[in-house]
Amino acid sequence: MDSPLRLRQDGGMTAQSDLVSLFAPGTDVVDGELVIGGVPATRLAAEFGTPAYVIDEGYLRQRVRDYRDGLAARWPNSRVYFASKSFPSTPVYRVMAEEGIGVDVAGGGEIVMALAAGFAGADLLLHGNAKTDAELRMVLEAGVGLIVIDNFRDIERIEKLASSFVDVLVRVRPNVGAATHTAMATATDASKFGLRLDDAREAIRRIEASTHLVMKGLHVHVGSQILQAAPFAEAIAAIGTLGEFEIYDLGGGLGERYTYSDPDLSLDDYLDAVVGAARSSLPANARILLEPGRSLVARAGCTLYEVVNVKESDSPLAPTFVAINGGMADNLEVSLYGQRFEATIVDAVGGGESVSLVGRHCESGDMLSEGVLLQNPEPGDIVAVPVTGAYCFTMSNNYNGALRPPVIFVREGQARAVVRRETYDDLIARDMVI
View 1 (tube, rainbow, N blue to C red):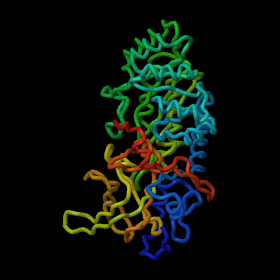
View 2 (cartoon, one colour):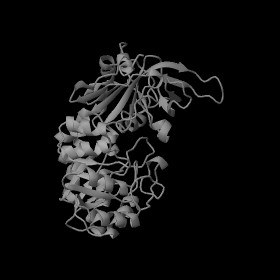
View 3 (tube, rainbow, N blue to C red):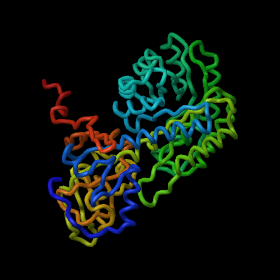
């Protein structure tokens, strides 16, 4: 924004501190402006444009270390794997590789980016309920560390494609539910992933009789955006009934606070619950793996937008609509999962009047947040939406020909683009004119 900071109504210290608490730790308000990773938000918008995904690299690295070291302190024979579907970009993969954790991949593009970022094949763990032969060949040629068996056909195809021994885990679906969106629940009988307990026993038998597959252990994943400890413990107890193995991959699923009202299951509480359940149900000498995604990257990211239009309420049934220059092309979480996000004008942080923050796309469902508090929004204002580091970049798209935003890393007062903004030339680059 070129205009100087303006004096506005005071949103109140409580409202401001509540709002800032949703951003990456270290985010602050300095001279009335939101500062992320030591960089003023208006400077970021002016330099890189909007919409833009902003990642606090310092916090991201610290979060990885907290996971890695917290798990190791509780269960030394362990490793963390980044669930890369949450933010599949080469710069983020590179951060994970540099911090010494592994990576789980579930598609050819994720495999290519992970390898390009510096991961060795042995650091890869391959997932997927419908792995293609091409993807299996890619990871086999790379010397993949582990492949998760999702179904009986996986066993048959890997047996045919492998020319040497392949370490595998069997994904178990123990019919454990969790308080999350239906589309994020992955351990119930209705899920497309994994095998029921009885089928898992049969898969184990077949793998143990295989000439190429090596039965290393079990995998279970309850789902995503889970903020209660009980489902994790229940799932671990269930897989413990299948026998003793070398490796137990306990998945991910720890949720993140998106709004003021969300409960907070801390990383320490989550690790205590998971490791406590493992001590009760799994062999003491087993290797434990965890696959965090959302809880690694969500809070590290925020998205910056510019207000394009403010449409005052003209009906008792209509709110004031604040339209920004992004929406469902850069954040599908609202439309797909009903996820709520908070927001603030970056030079008037916290408080204000209740408005509906809407996107620019030709869909009535293109809504970022209803009932969000903004102080006197005006066209040209820069708006920041916190907790967008997970799945927003992943699911970004070209609705109405929108250009996918850049990714900006900020750290210790420095900012750099690590993924450039898409261009109109990019949109037509794959078109074949006949």
